[in-house]
Amino acid sequence: MKTLSFALISAGAAALVIPALAQTQLPNGTGKQIVETQCTVCHEALRITNAGHTREEWDNVVHNMIMMGAVLKPEQISVVTNYLASNFPPKAKSKSSTRSSRRTSMPSRCRRTIPMRSFRC
Ligand code: HEC
Image 1 (cartoon, rainbow, N blue to C red):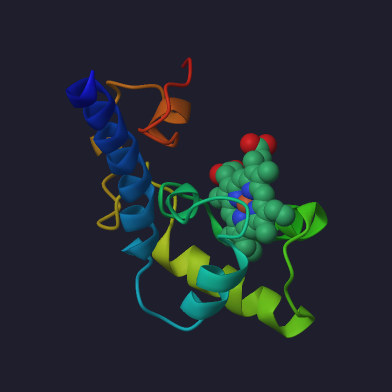
Image 2 (cartoon, rainbow, N blue to C red; image 1 turned 30 degrees about the horizontal axis):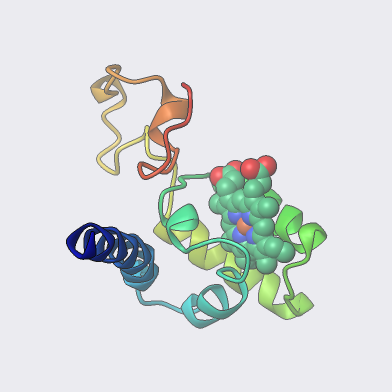
């Protein structure tokens, strides 16, 4: 029985380590620190780095998060929105603007979801 419970404990430890590593993935830039401290209170940064939005959408997301309880000073809102909009643009559009190169293997709403959880797509 000892080996079995040891195996269970190490599996549990591994599950804790993975999300902790995922939090260090925010790219450098003005606003990173605000996002790092204020936006990872309720969910991991992966939730943000996995998302891709236009500036208007990020503006919406940030305001939604504030309504949910994110603590941002009024002057931090545009800093955070700028940071997110320039680092996490919509994923469907590639930067070289080749619109026809859209990958269609997966519905777009599946692509945005967190790979660790199994959402129904
Ligand atoms: C008070 C808790 C809280 C804080 C602080 C918070 N969030 Fe969220 N966030 C949530 C919850 C809850 C959801 C899930 C909402 C849902 O799935 O409808 C979410 C979902 C998200 C999503 C996924 C939704 C989407 O449309 O892609 C993004 C991106 C996100 N948050 C970004 C941020 C950013 C950026 C900040 C910092 C400005 C932030 N969050 C701070 C609670 C919070």
